[in-house]
Amino acid sequence: MAKRFVPSSIPMPIQVELFGIPRQRAGASEVELDAQDLGTLLVKLGDRFPQLEHVCVEGGRLKQGYLANLNGRQFVSDPETILSNGDAVLILSADAGG
Image (tube, rainbow, N blue to C red; front, side, top):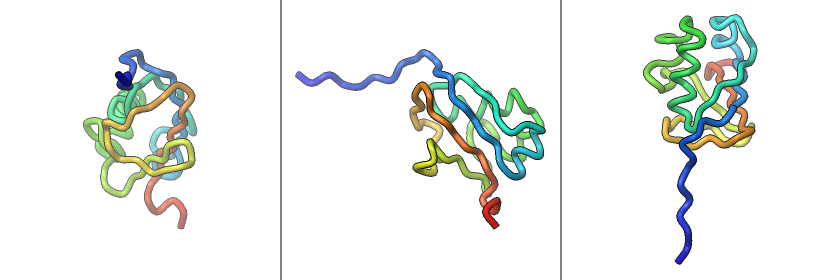
């Protein structure tokens, strides 16, 4: 019988980089937060930088016009996206590229 992958309930250190409006609002370019999924990461990001709450993030979700990129490979928005130790998440405004 094959074993099912069960995500760890232990929070993992995730490197979060802020770009564009999120960086301006937070007054920081990066922070490390412990989280096992994107939703938890966004809640903790809002707690750490209250000035992002209701502008970029709200209730564990990104507001419209903001994006999260996981490890430079894919854009993610599902709060249940599982994160792993060593992952990097870039939070940016959708128009940051010009």
